[in-house]
Image 1 (cartoon, rainbow, N blue to C red):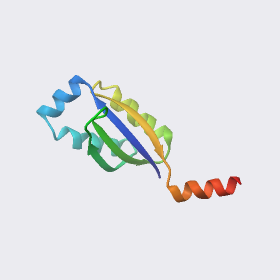
Image 2 (tube, one colour; image 1 turned 180 degrees about the vertical axis):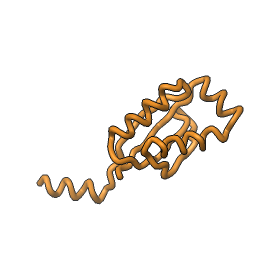
Image 3 (tube, rainbow, N blue to C red; image 1 turned 135 degrees about the horizontal axis):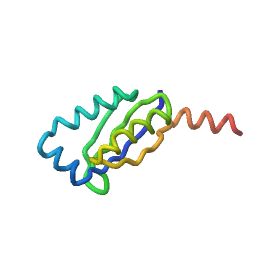
Length: 97
């Protein structure tokens, strides 16, 4: 499984939904799991993004499907980052040299 960081920004609709039903956030996390990902950690943020969610998924295709499905609802937009374990990254660099 690979690690991905989802930076999410709620739309006005998403903020309203969360204010009325805060448990919706946990429902979305279960939906991520149903779509093939696994939520490892999550933080509410102050600043340009509303949430940082660390998920594991088999590959970029699965994460693309997750963010497409969630974005299509109109309640949030996402920026997705691939996270590489530093030891694995260093090993890959050493192999290239």
